[in-house]
Amino acid sequence: MKHVIAAALGTLVIFLTITVQAQVTTHPSTIRPLIHADVRITDEIDLDAHVIPTFNLMEPLNPYIFIGPNFKSLKGMFEISPLLGWNFGLDEPVFAVAFTLNVTDKFWTWADVEVQAPSWSGYYFVQLEYQFLPYIGVGAETEGFGAYNDTDSWSHGGGPNLIFNIGDHLGIDLALHVRDLEHQVGLQFVSRVHLTL
Image (tube, rainbow, N blue to C red; front, top):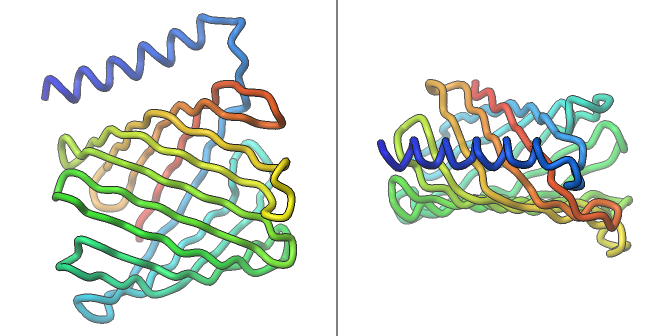
């Protein structure tokens, strides 16, 4: 419990320090809602669906939807999920693959790589977490987006995070990224709200 309190207080101190330091470059915060659902087909296969109403609630809606199987192996230690999606904002398909590695019941990692066509827009996300308690985890993450055919367009960021699980259906992720956005490095507060049906 001491570790949880120390991690929460440390993150709060970082957020407050950044707020006080006016000379620090900041990028607009993001609030991303995500809706998840899955249907168990067998012990090793689920059918997953994900809806992302928008990449950032501070901007106009740009919904994405994904569906695909989730294959589990090694008694759930490793999962891979090839997904087919649609970006309604660009009106084009999205191809994605997600990986999960459950090293222990408290330590896990998750990664996602996406590509859209014909725009060749791309996205990646990697997360490492240590679950102190069933309802709180602490870790680090990195995220990037841009166009595969224009390397100059990419924005990369990453930093520490806190994950809160509120029951079986609601989760809140809070992260502080150091982000390179339009060739300007700055801090960005990132939040995600997960609703699992």
